[in-house]
Length: 279
Image (cartoon, rainbow, N blue to C red):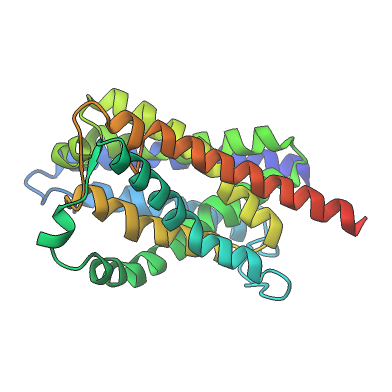
């Protein structure tokens, strides 16, 4: 079984990483498409899920380890954590940035209610992330765990493949204005920072999946993240002082990433402690 799993993980990684570049080639052939909504970008989005469906259906992976059962019993604490992680860390970062004079939150009064924007985005993000988490946690993380790898290898491999899938998005598909609103750097530097962030974030996602055996807490956490921090920064609800984005951006700041890594390691400690108690 391990040989099949290893072979299929290699196939998965290859097709997932190639998917965006295939999309880029398609867009170069098909000109005059709307920015942010091209056929190539659509291929980039759906090919990982299609790859998983094919591997599970025809390459021996099967369907028993998808993590699709909610497993509420005994896991409500993890769902609660999934709901609160991103709001809590974002709140800490905003507080620190404001106290240091690096973040200006005065736009909140002049713009539409952020709560309404957040709730309006949440359902759509939740639906989208069912498909994403079926790939990144329900397949990639699940298969890595079956190989009995050390935790650090699981975090690193899951995060790097997740990040590498995004490379064409950051280099080609992402509008430059949106990128600059997060970090005012060139696309290569932005891509490198984003991948480091995803490796850091993967600790939390892996631990939630590992503790519950379900993708649903990960779907919930991912959806809150998408609906919260992206509009907060990209839509201009906050202003970050020039040169301080590296430190306190709620999306890609050093402080932010370190806090998420800390949360992930804390979840790992809780899981290991719970496992020791059961033994």
